[in-house]
Image 1: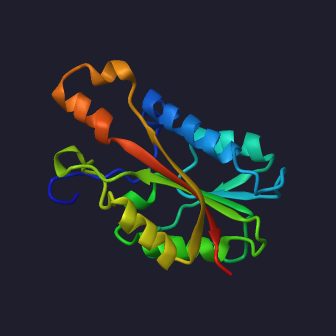
Image 2: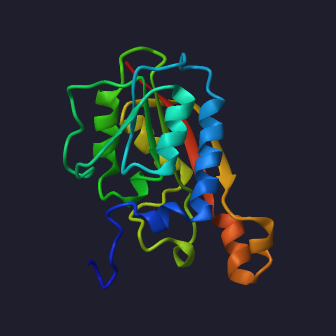
Length: 193
């Protein structure tokens, strides 16, 4: 516990069953499907974090098994015995004290092939009164782009999408502000070699 706030350390069934998460996963997978860079099927993939229903969706799309991680992503290395043509990190880096460490580890885990890709998503910056207490970093676009470049990646594509239904927006002032500010940034990244 930090400052009276207990942080989530694993993805449980209750969290996975939330319809908002399914909507995020479906929008993220639509972005992944639009990539023409990765020849399908691939031999293996890596989904950073716990296994979720999104992992199964990725496996169905790419036609392979996706490994997941169980290490401390702030300090520990990823398995260096394997390399991957595709790595996903959907809404992970905002939970880390040191997101640069993870991005450098992912860069090392990517295949050297020019078609290898990291698909990364994270919430866009929003005013402090709307920020999640579980997030250490909700970065402005400029800061996120600088972090991506510092880690040795170049942006192949990016997009932004909302995560609230129009009806949610009509429930009051705070929900309306959430509809305006709560966006997910998603990137297709290639390692600079």
